[in-house]
Length: 254
Image (cartoon, rainbow, N blue to C red; front, side):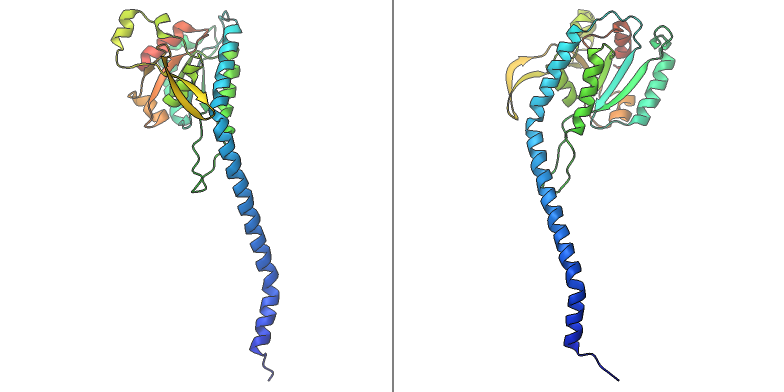
């Protein structure tokens, strides 16, 4: 009976498995290199994100000012925006709203309700949780197009997105919509935001504030279902075509 020398067996085993081990090592090195490049890219993108978002807001305001505000038959549209939105809860809320306010149908056109994921993505570099900040811009760009064409009337938003949009002049001041007595009745829930100067990714308050432009509705139970435990507000768009309907919807939320 022939016996294989142990050393020879080890040599054969190593000769078979060494190429596979080398290949696995190379794949791991390539993966780590790509991940490192992605992390650097994310850091660079995130550094310039605040400035880019403000530029988009400026474009929104400019286009909104140029857009005609006489489309009386434009369907009423309500937008929900945050990094987190429960779309099933949006559907439940809008179904009940249509029943409560059938006048939201404009000239036979049903109202539109749109969810938009937007905001600045927070990435955890150390733990390797990397989200694409470019994707977080998609909602803002869509909103830019809709507002510039006068298609959005009212927005329910988390406070971070609302602050940025308010600083860009996207929302109508509430003193142009409500009387002094109506505003006084909402005291403590009215929203305005500090104006900010940006130097790269560094933000510095200017000491000035935006006009009062929103109402805190964080305690609204249906909005809690949509946004979770976020601080949220409701805002009317600066060039809303269905202003009376937007005010009516806003009042149902407070």
